[in-house]
Amino acid sequence: MLDIIILVVQVLLAVLGAYSLFFSFFGFYRKKRTPAVPAQKRFAVLVAAHNEEKVVGALIENLKQLDYPKELYDVFVICDNCSDRTADIAKQMGVHACVRHNPNLRGKGFAIEWMLKELWKMPTAYDGVVILDADNLVNADFLQHMNNELCSGSKVIQAYLDTKNPNDSWITAAYAITYWFCNRLWQLPRTNLKLANFLGGTGMCFDSGLLKEMGWGATSLVEDLEFTVRCVKRGINPTMCYDAKVYDEKPLTFKASARQRLRWMQGHFDVARRYFFPLLWQGIKERSWAKIDTAIYTFNVYNVLLGFIFSAILWIDVALPGTPHFTSLYEYVPTWLMVIVTALVYLGFPIAMALEKVKSWRMYAALITYPIYLASWWPITLYAFFTQNNKQWSHTQHTRVIRLEDVQSKQV
Image (cartoon, rainbow, N blue to C red):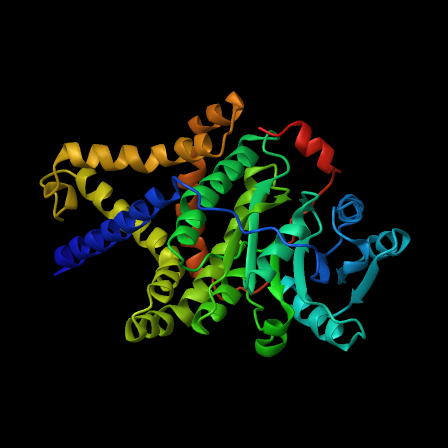
């Protein structure tokens, strides 16, 4: 019986892998861009900040220089449980410093929920709400592209996620490769197939009417995924704006990266536990590919977990003396086919980089250490499974200033 279970799980994981590989081929081309329209939407730009005095000034400076009418957007820095000069810097630079103190409800999701309630009380009416992190930077045309998307009918929009510091370490290079891959061969295929895109935690834009109607309600450790699922359940598919770029600063060390990714996986387990089966069943009943696909995406955390556990079982079984006790799927699949599939999976990363016109040889050289980054997801996910009830927000510290001109001068 155990042998049958192990074989069935292997088949399930292979099917899910084939499904992801199938999707990637639809990212080889881009459809026409959203038509440009005159600036008409008014935006509230919310900046989530917890002790970000080192970096928030550079973002505020960046936002004040956007190529968008200044009277059509306001910047609000959410100074969430700060004990540094974040609020003072925001005030000195002429933007709204919204101070929140609540040691019991900590984390970005709670901060956003509080800020939205405060925003709706204000006399100014906003058409769209943009959410950024304090360590971000955006291109000068960011709001113009969001204006175009809202005018075209999109209600929830995710910008193109890029990195501020890909050259800092092998870890930041790994993040950059992951972003290029996800943008091109994960998000773009869903755009081309008219399915739901996934929110990435920053560079997000929302129709104000929708936010008022459904509320934020996403207070897990992965508020972006939770809100994505809530939208898809309502029949609202988030879209991706490929031309609106946001640059995110990534951790420099493996330890800091592991801590950040542990929080992501803990939150992912929480969301999968609450939404996978309801969304999958709803998608099957309604014959909605978008809902089924989003449900499968929430299950990915279990895909990683099961892949690690059952791979370890088979490796140990082969290493032990005597004849292996368990059946491996490889026994039923030609070796040449497995070699081709494995090569295609890994080649997806340099292919995505080429499609994204990455020219830096250092980034391609980083593919050598990239498998270490990929393999590290296994133990992180395993530990996250046993600690998934931990709801404590872990803050990623930022200690240096990077401005948009620095990013653009070093763009790969």
